[in-house]
Length: 395
Image (cartoon, rainbow, N blue to C red; front, side, top):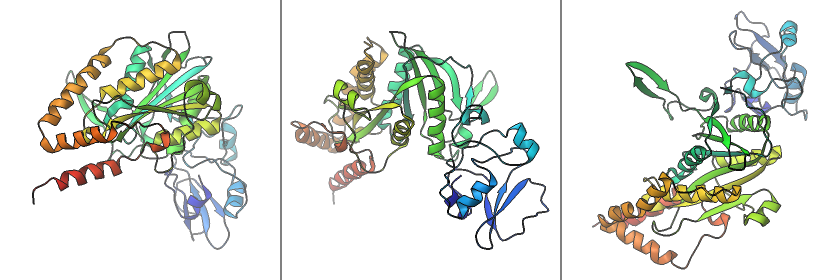
């Protein structure tokens, strides 16, 4: 909960039921609530639904001080924890900013549901990828799927999608098995396996969340801490003016100077819109994890087609980073066929062929060498492609 959100009568990160009203502190409603006087005539009213006792990062005195402009800092909105028995007996809100000894965590209230609880490993690697804005040509998620098969990962947890997705935008699907209907929700999946040298590896794979990104990243951070993760590797793919038969550029960036020097990575200098990958990398850095982000290029003019070629390039770069030889797989076969399939697609469209040839000529002597040159936002490149195609239309 952020004080600014409370003062404005709501927030974009949590449907907490907070409201400011000029109503008296007592209410005829049966819904439990705490009313806190704030400067002026308004009252900050914290509503706690009977079926879900929501509690806040500090007691009522601290919340009132926050509203009065005190420097006290609350946990970001949406960070809800289970109410302790002691707090229930006293009838007062109580929880912690970040889980400490004996404090409930985000996972304890259902944001993260464990299927099994692995013991913390040593030097555990976490690999994360999300479909959507960070995943041109499905390259990042397909690469992560391949890696979790390669490392024989099995499910250990999933993140409850209820808090993080707008189901009108990312709709669940219905499946029928043996006559029984089942709703398949867009649930981020957590699995664990082993690299060839025995190091544990955790994969997080799902759809880019639509809501509460900071809380979502907090869930991943707390889960990573509980599993002994030391390094977080995020995967992304973006649209660039590259030819489909050209080698895939994979650029890596890290917040660790030693890794940058030893692995040929770079410190990111990108400025502009970002996705959940950028937010997660920042959260990892603030939490003290080493984080590495690998991004592969996908041709702008075939952005609607999956790119196993880019997925393979990402997987091989991760293998190189981990010191693992991946070997041949179905992804290699799909990548080998990709160029032929796109050749056939382009050959059937003179305008597209002209654009592809133009890209080939312009990029013949160029290569993406700096992470800052890689545009995370694909909209500009798509607009450029559409403008080119419009220019080719007959008058």
